Image (cartoon, rainbow over all chains, first blue to last red):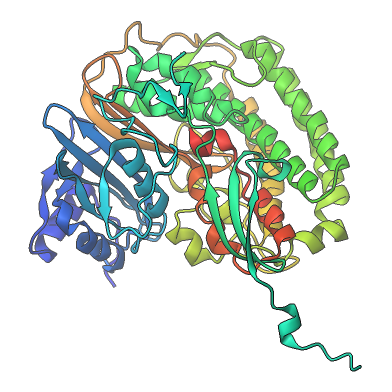
Length: 165
Length: 380
């Protein structure tokens, strides 16, 4: 049983060898951590492979974050994965155009993604295809806009109450 | 008349009730929409966000990475030192900054003191939820001593703004070392007192054993962390498994749930992990006090201006509630491009619907209490 801890670049190479499409490349980092870029419509397949493959065994999703990149007119999702059995860690990134921000949901792979994905929808307006309950989580259901977008303008009033002070 | 009870007498219509947002056992403003069949919980939908302040937007609006620190205090206001510590470590890693020895030791001691203070609050209010009022007061007496130490070093009792990027706001006073050592000495017997009073109290055991059982594989799939995960028997502590700061220098154990009075992963196990963790924190503090250098300028490595390179990092630290992650993206400008907080309470609370199905309504109070949520952290 070859089961050893892998570095992010090894994981990227391993993914390239075993997955036909969707793995777009490995981005090394000068400071901080590197990441693997993936296509948004293949996220679920890659996630399932990452979880179930015996060499990778990413059994936990530590964090799922939405990001707005205003210069590129894009939204992005970053997945931080960790394997408690093998001890390695990797970051995946998927980018989508802001006018059609659809990413596959990984809620069925890691249950923890449920609330993280709802938060990314609430805060940035990223739609997760296949999520069982794509509702706002932190803001009220009838709130307007997605606060963490860089061009967000807060609504003047909510239920007749001024929101600015 | 026979006294035979037919099943349909007990069949009731499903009823939906709201627990909270203003409810003493929800530890803040949390609304649980509970669907009940008689007294049995069939579904729970947590509604969160009542304390949402959008910390992440504030962080992006700051023109300096240091200015975010006071806001991190307010994420989890009962363990502010741990929040600052996590954020500062993330920024320092992005800056590739070395921190003086003395600073590291002071930070670790403060983090462990804060862990004890936070667990005392968690344990006390958990007892309070289940009707045990006295242990709560005992816990608060001890917590008060820690807050007094914090007040002496930082001037504040809850929201410190004390740990800064590269160092500390000011050096600790001379009285810090003896006072902390004194606290460690006097606190140890109090844990035994607490065990006699609450942990092994039969009423308390009856209310918490075999309630809200969280199996280990479910906990991992939900990315539970902290006492929530360790209560399920998984030996996982970032201080040991992914050491940060100087935690690799200390000898300590990781307490896990064993199903001592019930099933592994029940409310009592989660509770007891916290109690035993306090003992381990004392062990760490003792070692740190011994090894801590007496001399050293705590402001030595503090940068005058923070100049970031382009890059991003996800750094996680072990707070009293579990894995606190900061995902920071820097775009070279002086303000952070993105700061995402992976709050342990947020993730731990998302498990509630899965573990409270089939519980009695009164047990739901025990389950919520055993997760030890802080709503400031859930909602951010």
